[in-house]
Amino acid sequence: MNIEAFIAERRPVWQHLDDVLKRAEMAGDTLSRTDLHELVELYRRTCSDLNRVQSNTANPEILGYLNQLTGRAYRFVYRAAHDTPVWASFRRLIATEIPATFRRERLAVIAAASTMMLGVLFGAAAVLINPANGRRLIPPMFFTERPRDRVERIEKGDERIDNVEKALFFSASLYTHNIKVSMLAFSLGALTIIGTILLLFYNGMILGAIATMYVLDDVPLFFFAWVGPHGALELPAIIFSAAAGLVAGRAFLMPGNLSRAASLRRVLPAVWRMMIGTALTLVCAGIVEGSFSQFSSRTFPYPLKIAVAVLLFAGLVAYLFLRGLGEEA
Amino acid sequence: MRELTITTPEHVNIKLEPAGSGSRFLAIMIDAVIIQAVASVIYVVAVNVVPRLVAAAIFVTASFILTWGWHVYFEVKRHGRTPGKRALSLRVIDARGLPVSLYQSIVRNMARIVDFIPAFYGVGALVSILRGDRKRLGDVLADTLVIRESQPLAYRGQLGAERHFNTLRTPRTLRLIRHRVSLEEREFLLALCLRAQKMSPASRYDLMEEVAKTYREKLDIDDTSISGENLVRDLTAVLFSKR
View 1: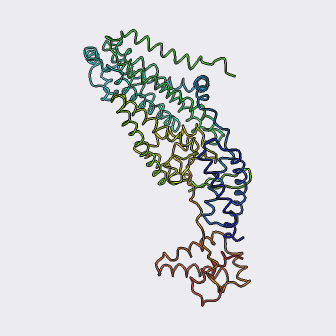
View 2: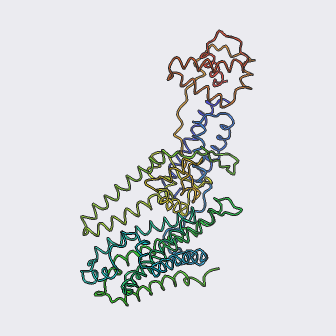
View 3: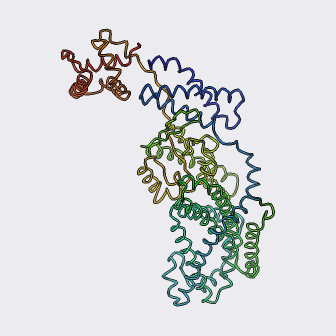
């Protein structure tokens, strides 16, 4: 076969396919009927050209060009179903899919929650045995003064957050940071499992140690009123992202008789729903932490803050474990 | 580098080439610069409209959404190409050759946070360099692949027309050439002729003589009066001439 003559003859077809593909890529999902028919037709012709070229030349330039062209067309011809409207699928995601996924993956959620609880117990026990252990467990940046002194300072001084603007900015910084932490918890779990377990245990341990120090210093109410309102959402959210990581990690590290890729593909829908759930919860938690959590007893009595914390937690649990319960097939 | 082969229902093998770490790094730099620019514009606009702290809150949220949503949006809605990838002819695809799905895109971009350790793609670059298919950890988790799409086909000149008197054009030699010169060798010879002018005279002479020696043996050419370069050029002309 004379490859040069072949290229000269077939080039208009390839050029045409390239043009149609460019149009299609620009158009998003609104490809016209004629364009679509043309695309399929041109794709088939270019495929057979690629076949001939593959057996007649090893020229990397021609092969690269035709592979690229057919590869692009292939993704248009054989792609999965078109997207459903964004808003409708988002509503379905919130209304049924996220809670259903959590119920299905409850084992991973329970595993993650227990790991954190173990950490809390360990931290608490360590401080109970010897209060000096607190200083060893907690990073110095979180431990600047004695709990009682801190409570006094905060209750005497001005409210830290005294207008909506400050609250907004503080909230925004908090939830962006926390979502990053949740992504880290997920990725570490997906890649190593043990990474997430350690992260959960470590965070639980710090929480347990700090809580016990406040209790020992006789200011438990302050602590729970301070951490409770956002903690009621934030801690579950971190647990959820870790659970998503454990689900992905199990699929990735222990694929059984599937290939790793196939095994991951199976859990992908569950994982991303759990992560969207986590991110949304963290946005709510951030807004609470940036505003309501920061007020001392002069603005909101502590029992009220704790009551709000309990309500928020109950609401989250009810949403995840009761929402759409009857609708499941 | 390991290339990806898709066998289509038409029984054609499409081969796609994974993109190297260098071009991917450059693409991400371009995206990062654009994202920062967009976020700064949003801040400058916001600070003139609303109080400073509210503008800061908008900036923090906007740059967060841009940083993490940018790639997801373009990968899903613009057929696997962010502006940076588009500039460098890269594309993210499902490792089975299909378009990347929303789930895959979200997972591959969340894992970016681990690829980013310790600073700007330490782990990701290392993993990508070590793997034959150039996947970073996010690609491994989402089973996606970044491929390099080759540039448009340049016109190839007519090499066959240059040489009118060709001592190799005897039936016997032509038959031997047909049987003993593989496809890869043909391309090698063509590339050699095209690049010859860029070589230093000494190395050009050595290389041509060495190649010619191989083909003298392979094709049973006894005529020692033609130089190495002439033999190589005659051979290439025969291979690529219009028959």
